[in-house]
Image 1 (cartoon, one colour):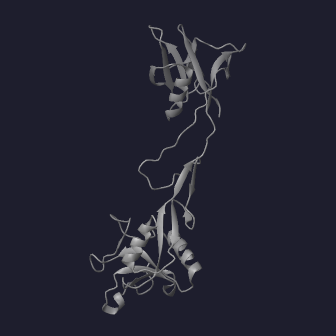
Image 2 (tube, one colour; image 1 turned 180 degrees about the vertical axis):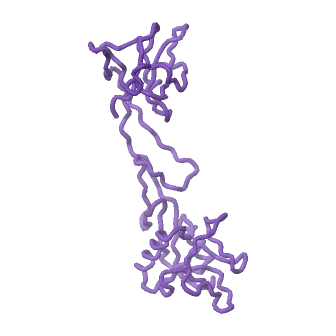
Image 3 (tube, one colour; image 1 turned 90 degrees about the vertical axis):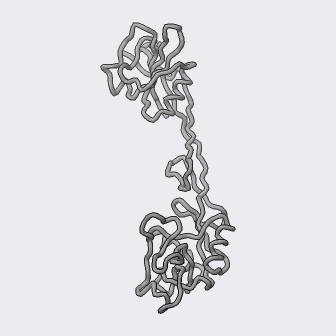
Length: 262
């Protein structure tokens, strides 16, 4: 008979890193936030400009505020934008980052290249004002909170969007326990066999446990010695409770450890 006893406790703290992404991670160890006057929604921060701008000036105003002109990608995002605008005025008009300047009648939206842009036009829109040159898109109360084409030099509010800020929260440490016999003595010739993911020379239990914590498939680990007496860390993809048949005594030095709590 054997048991697991916390003879050596390893505190392994995970650090979550998000590379090349503007999306706030969905990990529970990450907290998203926005600067003052910006509203958090999903993976971004939104803000209605305090002044009115032409369409081109609105794009620059958003850049000056550290963001870009928003172009909704879904009905939920569009509803968020209309709710923000309605708080400013019941007769609001807000620019969005969609236009057909390059090719008349072919609407393009920033951030939606390579696919069909998300466009929810009001009835009869876009109409180019009966033959005019309305190349920029807006969302307006008078168009039932839907989209309409308008002259780009007119002045409207604009909703800007920027990346949400995120910080990593402290996580619970992962702790490993070495296997012991019924008297609490560490088993130094019993290991889990035939579940080795990889092995390498290690300084000891702490280093091996740290490597296991960083390996997604690692469930437990063995520490044995090679012919030169150096410690070898073996990372396993199973545990002694999951495969009791392969948790066996060996004729060489071998210690087994797995997560005991945390």
